[in-house]
Each structure stands twice: as C-alpha cells, then as structure tokens.
Length: 254
Image 1 (tube, rainbow, N blue to C red):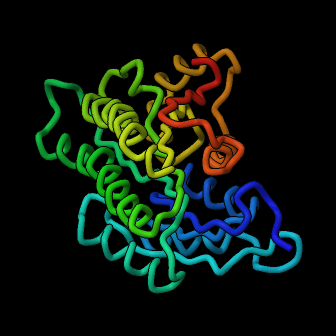
Image 2: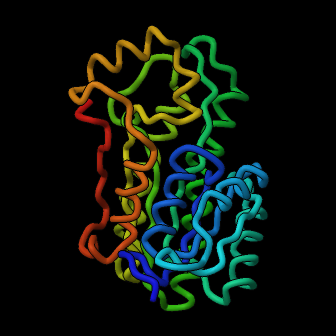
C-alpha cells in the first residue's frame, strides 16, 4: 500500500529538470504522489524521472511522466494539460510553478529583450499554468493545491536583478489574488520565497556577492533543494489544509 502525505495524488511540477523543481518531484514521489515532470528541456525532465524510485516496494507510486513545456506559451501549457488528461484521465491536483530564468544586468544596462523574457517565463508563465490547470480543477470539481516559487529577493530586492526581482515580487501578489479567488473552489494557493539554494541559478552569482550573502544568513549556509521540496510537499498535502494565501520564506533567516 502506498503511504505518504500526498499518497494517491497527481502532481505537475514545472522547471522540473533541475534544482528546486527536481527536488520537488523527488520529495512528492517519496510521499506517494505520481509526478509529471515538466521542463523546456525534455531530456532534463526525463533525467529527473530517472532519479525517482521505481514503482515497487515501500516507494510504490503511479507511473511518472515527463513532458516538454514552455510556460510562457499558452498553447504549450494547454498541450501539457491535454496530455495529462489523456494519460491520467484527470487533472493534477498539485501544481508546482518552479520554472524560472535569470537574465541579470544593471537597471541602466538592462535590455528590453532580457526584461521581457524573464517576466514572460517567471510571471506570465506562472499565471498561464495557474489559470489553465485551475480551470480544469474547477471543471472537474476537484480540490487542489498550487505552490508558486517566488524568491527572497522578490521581498527585499537585489542589485542587478531588476527584471528577476520584479517578476518574483509579481508572483507573490498574483498568488495572493489567486488564493482569494480560488479558495471558494477549495483550491489553495501559496507562495514560497527561497533564499540561497544550491541550484544552477545560484551558480551564476559572483563569488564575492555569494560570500556577502552567506555572511548575512544566520544559518551560515546555502540550502539543499530537497529542503525546499519538503516545504512544497507539506503545502501540497492536507497537513496544510488551512494554509491559503501564505507567503513563506525559506531562507535560513536572511
């Protein structure tokens, strides 16, 4: 018998090819969910699926799958829903919006193209996935949990990231509105603000800047992506059944 706090649930995770998205897939699976790993890079999404235990023994779960998804394109998001419905005969009741990119530069040097691309993926992409999959949940009269990944810099700001910070602050505001609107359909929406997590995005931060930030973190270290995956899974589960519209830091006290 499958056990775990999300046993028997179907989860869609965007940005699942690495970092927080991959860790979310691993923890959700460990806790009994069937996972759809979605990423712009299909091969990376498949690699994530390969890191999940096979459906046998104590970790037995449903058949996981990987899909290619460009979150900033509505047609791609709709195709992802259609594929999930065809394969699993129901929409996922856990949606994790983890897809995100950076295109850093100073405000006075930021190109319009780099600004638009980051906002398109991080903010618009979160909107499109929320809207598309929440419509499917309401049509099926199913409860759900949507977890949107923002960033601690969306709260405090960070030099050289005007586009990224703007997009992540927008995710927070959008999550709060979605929680108000979707709560009546028993769909909870919460946002997580990770700090310095050991992910590919963080590897782009200059060493000098990294040392300065680590010095400001009371716990004195980066987080393992799995630590974020644990929080995501808690918010996906009924253990957080009255948590809605929350914005939760996971930043070691930064």
